[in-house]
Image (cartoon, rainbow, N blue to C red; front, side, top):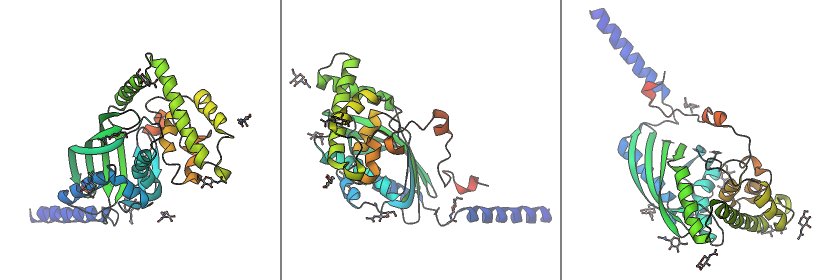
Length: 297
Ligand SMILES: *[C@@H]1O[C@H](CO)[C@@H](O)[C@H](O)[C@H]1NC(C)=O
Ligand SMILES: *[C@@H]1O[C@H](CO)[C@@H](O)[C@H](O)[C@H]1NC(C)=O
Ligand SMILES: *[C@@H]1O[C@H](CO)[C@@H](O)[C@H](O)[C@H]1NC(C)=O
Ligand SMILES: *[C@@H]1O[C@H](CO)[C@@H](O)[C@H](O)[C@H]1NC(C)=O
Ligand SMILES: *[C@@H]1O[C@H](CO)[C@@H](O)[C@H](O)[C@H]1NC(C)=O
Ligand SMILES: *[C@@H]1O[C@H](CO)[C@@H](O)[C@H](O)[C@H]1NC(C)=O
Ligand SMILES: *[C@@H]1O[C@H](CO)[C@@H](O)[C@H](O)[C@H]1NC(C)=O
C-alpha cells in the first residue's frame, strides 16, 4: 500500500513537473479576469475610430512582433506590421477614404456572446455592429475566434471565422441593389463590379506608380478588373477575385511596395489561386497549441 501511494505520489509530482515544463516563456498562466480584460481591450481598439490610433503605430503594441493570424474568408497573416494593417488599418483607411467603394463595413460596437479562457488562450464569439458606409446600412456581424496571449498581454495568435458570412454577403448585395436601382442579380453584380473596379483603380493610380506599377493605365486596370478577373464567391476573399482586391485596396496606402501587387494582375500571393479547399483545411499553420497545457503530452 505504502509503495503504491508513494508511487502514485511520485507519478503525480512528475506529471505536474511535465506539465509545467510544457508552459514556457511564450505561454503564460493568466487568470480568467486578466484574459477577459485582454480580450475586451483588443476589441475596444478594433472598433472604429479607436482603430485609427493603432493603425498609426505601424506595429500595434497590442500585437506580438511574431503574431500569426488567420481569417477563414481571407488568408493567414504573419507579423505585427501586416496584422496592424489588416486588423486596424483596413478599417481606418476605409473610413478615411470616403470615395472608396466597398462591401466592407466599420465595426462600431460589440458584445461578446460566448467566452471562455484558460492559461494563455481565449475563445470569444463576438457580435459586432458594422456600418457598411458605402451602402448606408448597419448590420450585425458575428466573428468567432480563438486567441493566444503572451506575458506582455499581446496577441500571439488569432484564428477567426465569420459566422453566416455567405448570408451576410447576400444581405449586403441585396441592400446594394436597392441603392444601385438594379432589379436582377446579374445587373447588381455588374453595377457592383463597376463600382469596385473604379475604386480599386483609383487607389492603384494614386499609389501604385514607379516600381510598384501594376497596370499600364487606369483604362487597362478597369478592363482587367471588370473583364478578366472573376467577382468571387463568398469564400474567395483571399483568391484571384475582385472581392479580394476590394479588401486589399484599403491596405495599399500604408505600404504600396507590399500591397500594390495584391490589387494588381498577379494578386501578389494574396489574391492568387494557389490555395485549395483541402490544403486550407489541413494547414497546420499555428506554432502554439490552442489547448491547455495539461492536455498536451
Ligand atoms: C476606445 O477604447 C477605449 C479603451 O481603450 C474604450 O474605453 C472606448 O470605449 C473605445 N471606444 C469605443 C467607441 O468603443
Ligand atoms: C515594425 O516592425 C518591423 C518588423 O519587425 C520593422 O522592420 C519595422 O521597422 C517596424 N516599424 C516601426 C515603425 O516600428
Ligand atoms: C455610417 O456611415 C455613414 C456613411 O459614412 C455615416 O453617414 C453615418 O453617420 C455612419 N453611422 C454611424 C452610426 O456611425
Ligand atoms: C436610384 O434611384 C433613385 C431614385 O430614383 C435616384 O435618386 C438615384 O440617383 C438612383 N441611383 C443610381 C445609382 O442610379
Ligand atoms: C507615387 O505615388 C505616391 C503616392 O501617391 C506619390 O507620393 C509619389 O510622388 C508618386 N511618384 C511618382 C514617381 O509619381
Ligand atoms: C493604356 O494601356 C494600354 C496597354 O498598354 C494601351 O494599349 C492603351 O493605349 C493605354 N490607354 C491610354 C488611354 O493610355
Ligand atoms: C514554447 O513552446 C512552443 C510550443 O511548444 C514552442 O513552439 C516554442 O518554440 C517555445 N518557446 C520557447 C521560447 O521555448
